[in-house]
Length: 476
Image 1 (cartoon, rainbow, N blue to C red):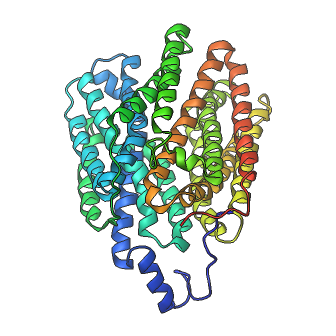
Image 2 (spheres, rainbow, N blue to C red):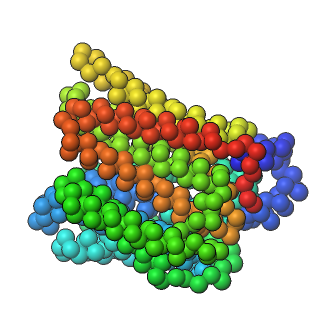
Image 3 (cartoon, rainbow, N blue to C red):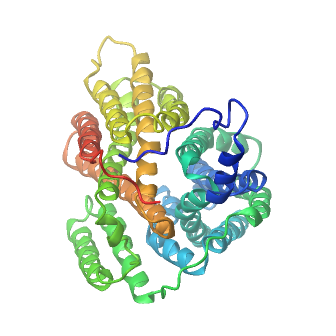
């Protein structure tokens, strides 16, 4: 069981005077309170910048493709190039951060993301914009895992669950607000402003980065061959997954290349004390369970995110605007559940919380799949997506806490990289599963089977979470 020590009387940050010994322990374990606020502003601000930009870019695809005279299929590379760069360099960014210093690489990622945003805004053509989005993805790959690692050095251990909860709330809020902000900007100005607005935000975040914690860097050598194998492996996996439904031969060949690179990479990294692929952490029972559960739940989330719009519009006959309204409760429920889950994680075994959250997610998705279509209102779908979102938020905070605290403190960057990789792996698997179903089955059958598969994946996450031994404790 991975729990922060329970709060004692007088130690809560929200009630009563703080004990002097507790304050001293907090300062020794994390950052002093004034500096902690600035560091958290940098970490949450950078996370918001990265997530918000991704959500906004999705909304802008039709406008961008029209103004740059690109086909919709070509315009999708604006999204694909960003995601590809992130997944290729997530683990290398964690390793480089451990070697050069988490704060340096994190701040460098913010600077690169901000500069690339300016290049995006200045793009005269689609190839230019795709290249700039690749650079944005490189910056995001440094921000995502290292932000989680830096939280561990910013907060004292007893408050870490709460910090992860606020981080989840911030990300969920940015995800929910992204489409609306993008639509507002497009209604008042042209698409380059979607990226130009990142400049002032990025400058403010960079200024706050001066207050980030500065843990001592490791002395491990950066293995360029392992970084290359890792990049080829994930690029082949993502591109192969994308091509498989339309071209079985090309997609299968790319997936075969991904498997070959994975075998070579694992053999190369097996004997290292701090490997690029965190094999050392995967040997830890609690960490391994958290990774598997995360892949399961993110697979269910992405499959449902793909299936639900088709279900609501094609099966229930609702408009695009209504579809957005019926799906909006999901991120809002995540925002509600995240801080609640953080508080419960200090009092309830986190294995139970993760299992309960995954079960709620599975129940909400199953109700969506089973809801009678004809002669029934669509409004209950909003209740079902609320239940799914609440369950996802209840699961995510303690599961991330388990993952982070199962790793030695000096391997926090690797733990953050593994968390991001598990998330992206689940998202890719969910998207691939839905692509295969749409390619092999009629739309009606694919949607219902996809939602049933998503519920099954979430239920698997619940069962896996219960396999975590309550007797095991996290590394400090």
